[in-house]
Length: 358
Image (cartoon, rainbow, N blue to C red):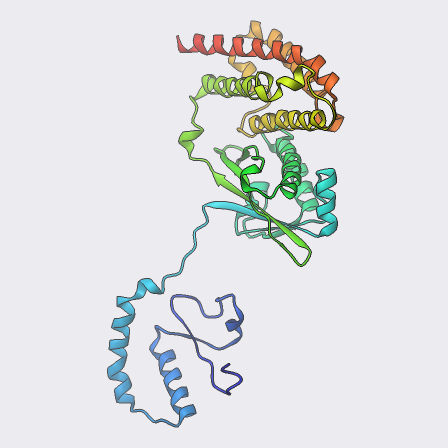
């Protein structure tokens, strides 16, 4: 409107660096409203354009009053923004969206944007704000050997693809699948941070879908464990508990384990079982533990027996990997073995914890 009327535009900023409004007004000259010289230039320009003269003495007398008003209302000009979450944005074109829906995989070309400092949890410099999904995966692969539990970050991205695929099919916010924990350790010798990721928004515009994933840092008191081997065992006891009451003895899977389903109901429940098993495993791997760390908490004479139990467990869950697409017969045939080894782990963990308490 000012341009149409041939009027001058004066952009006055308070407590913001000139040129950093991040809007179209950045193309206009900026004046710092707290600086006397800038205010004088504006007054002179208005006076010249309007052909209304003013006395410099009046300006000198008025400026101190102007400053007092600014100081009394400086809270109105304060501008700050604190991010308590890490946040990334995945931008999908129609082809990317279709692949995610059908294959539950994120295409390498998907653009990943991030708020400042958010990509550090994937090993990037805080200033990096844009990469492709393929570049992010390559970065995780390169750094994988430096993690306490190799493969856990890559498995987390696999789970993310599955959860995002579900989010594209579900429009109700209370119907979304939660994401497993994500663990980040800034330095090899430092203390790590546990985040609870979640899918926040899914806007669509001009054929592009933007999925927002937030990473909320969990308060340390919620994830606190005893130090030493006792703390390690409590983590593993948590895992055995989640496996037992979250899957093996959960009423939601009774019909699957007892062969009471068929058709679409069976296929949906099989997929739900595979995803739940993957979620629990990835959740546990992102607690900052080393793989099989619990063995060191037991006397040497017990480690061979426990090591054999671990191998049996891995052999079982390997046959239930989502990529193997195990059917209902495989799941039912492995169920008794899963229950048995879970009971054995619960027993040995409880016994060892009791011994360490004494």
